[in-house]
Image (tube, rainbow, N blue to C red; front, side, top):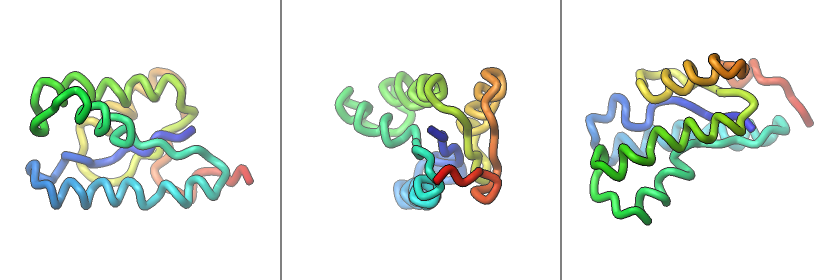
Length: 117
């Protein structure tokens, strides 16, 4: 399982259209990663439904803070590597830091990831 890390909120100034564009970019590598034989994971795939269930009203509220970054950290306990996409993101930078501390492989380009199929 490879965590895809990159800008979600970063660079979007909390504009929902730009945030959606960021998520689309993260998701754009999920299928190619899957086709290489890996399980792609994006923290927002887990965090967004949980935040909705917990009653988050807006990005950055207390529920958002409770779930958004901690979910990625928990996912990293199950991941084998991180694919860090380009773009400014404190959250993704922190994911890479945690992954390094855990000895996980960090990739910066889809082409670097071995084909397991």
